[in-house]
Image 1 (cartoon, rainbow, N blue to C red):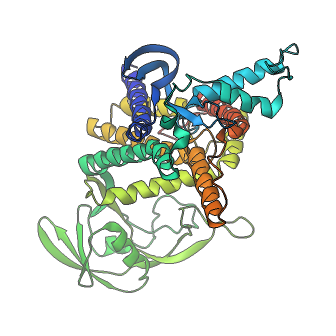
Image 2: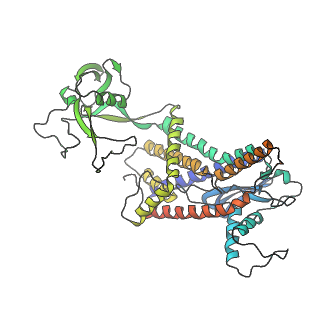
Image 3: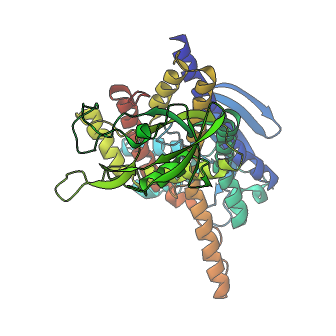
Length: 483
């Protein structure tokens, strides 16, 4: 139990560090560009510790599942001459790995709107006008709900006055920091520890070949001997070459055999330090046809399809093999593509999660996992007594790398309050100003991002609901290492 709790603690600390560095990715460029940063907070809820250094308050809050950097003037004034207000980067944690937290101004706007709707006796404003309700009221609240007003003479230090490229750098800094962390964690996993990999050494040699269409699981008297056994191959033999060409990895040998049913291959194996030539003739055998994702291909009637390939009846041994540093970018890129696919298909995947949580269906092991599920997996990994310590550490680094890839991808979704939403706003502003210059029109000025608060409100509700559903599914239908 203590090891299980240690695994959960490791992932919580790793998550908190990832969030903290994500916010550093926003903090550093904002300060370099002269934007006034009033707060840097890790977590949300009650403040456990804080300290002010210069004009910025640095602190840690009770729940380490979010964070924000408060920058003045993220929303431009509604009217010329008005003072802009402070706002935050509102780091929203990925629904697949964490939970959700909203920037303080967005939270205040949401709360104010709820209170306004529930108070029919709301007072008119100073001008005698009735308070605006609905979406317009939410936009007004977003402008008014501020951490602090801009001090006199500091309007030039507001976020909204930054040129487009500087806004993008500030908002992209957080996700990029997660991408850098993913590179670091995966580099430790691949280069420092290595990954399980098939070798060209034989782990077992079958006595016979059993077609994929057969229900048998063991060799029966009279079954023909497998080609490898007939050729005299033994467990422990290492494949050196085939037809004079060196064989460096198992996939290469498997492809050669698959493509040569009935053709005799001149194979050289290493046995007890000496090289031994053997003649190996792959037998034509049926196997299930698989697609690029490794799933069984079925016909129009749903029956599994087979194909004829060469087989010799051997299985490879596996070993932990350290990878070169050049393997890290490709590994990270593959993980980014996989997570992007999950995000794109998230609506359907959440339907599947619902069916699994409230029905009899099994969860997709490649589907989204919430913070509860990640914690459970981490606990299982650390408490696996039968696994070597190095193997458990390697898996934990891989889990932390995957977590940061998820943070990187999800935060680039072009919806407020995610970083991608702010980046999309900066790109739109740049395009609008550029078009005005081309047409020789007056500069339209910064776009009013406060108008996107209703969208933020809707996104927060949807992501909050998905987070709760994931947490529930992780409890009643958890994913485990044993399947």
